[in-house]
Image 1 (tube, rainbow over the protein chains, first blue to last red):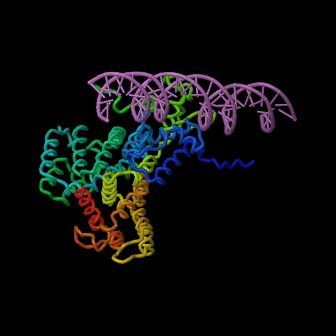
Image 2: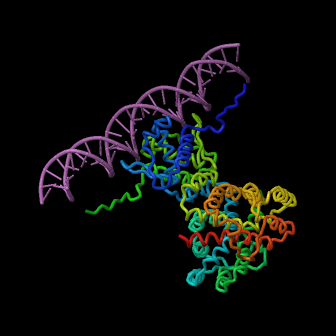
Length: 240
Length: 240
DNA sequence: TTCGTCATATTTGTCAGACAAATATGAATA
DNA sequence: TATTCATATTTGTCTGACAAATATGACGAA
């Protein structure tokens, strides 16, 4: 008895309606601010019940693609790009592989923003970073407090002037925190292996390159700063 | 007459239920594969109608956080991290600022993966890239066909072995294509300003650095390769 | 006329009930 | 024991109803 279902990935009516709505927006070339037909019309046009339509609309509403107000109908809105990411980037639900990937993603991105940073860097930025570094209490072995750590890197992201990059930092922060906690043995400074130049790079070191406006020096320092993460990631993956 | 509504950002019942469900998953420390109560129980426990609960569940289903099958109940699943991004990264709906941010994001990430690439680079990888470069028809002024362009950069992402990074490339591809089309005047090679080393870096040049296993040379070449984009981004932003 | 006030109609948000489809469960049977 | 089958249960979908909010138009006053 062959049980080859066509509906392998059970495409439900709501899924189809969701797709059709997105297609409709594209075909009609709708822009944020444009209004879309009311629920009843959409449901009739798509030949589905209002509940199914509303489930699909609810999804788009969550993504920030549409907004609706009583009696005023629904309009398209420009979605927050990373808004939906916040919901799924939940370390306790994601598996190790996905978490490692996210950590690698973050490290790569942060190394990659060196050029953007130096394109926008102002004296005021440097002053702000100096304050953060000064305020940061340094623990033994050059370990920073989580708050200081976060402030420092957030400021780097902010200097890029790229909102999406800055938001991204907030989204993956839980991942970094979670992994550092879960594998804290590895991240004990005494246990960490140093690669690259072999020298431990601190926030203060990075700040000095910014002050000197030494882009390539800063870039290499960032790479060294993240060397322990690369080491951790290659270990973590091989361990698996 | 003061009209200060508390419900400024109209938090609907569905929104609240969505939050409560996510909290519930976290508090109960549920993992992918774990089953969750049936709809009726959840609705009663939360004190809402079944339709409201279903709208919230529908959202989580879209994110890939849960799956449900008739009579078998619902289970938590590990979501695709970037799945939801695909829906909102729609160039025709996003504004220019968001699109510029995404392009900058992409460029930064791609420059940042140099280390990951060299950590994983194999002889076979080099052979594959060589094939792609050879197949790529080169237009006038060193312009590649979109397909060749895409294949080359996709392969770089793949070499990192990081699924999330690779998926990301697919997600923002429409953005790059859209911006290049919309501002094609700018991207005409004759009009492009060359920064960095001032020399146009081709895929073939990049390939040579890979062959020589020259990481820093490759990195600098990537930066030069993307120099036109940085130039475009700073212009686009100031133009605004 | 022009402005403010108010009743009405309309649209989204929520609830309740019903049925269909799929399938886990347990009873009946070989 | 293994198979078959009826039943119950759970999700998917439809329909109708009402509440809340507010756009709209009618009405009256200046």
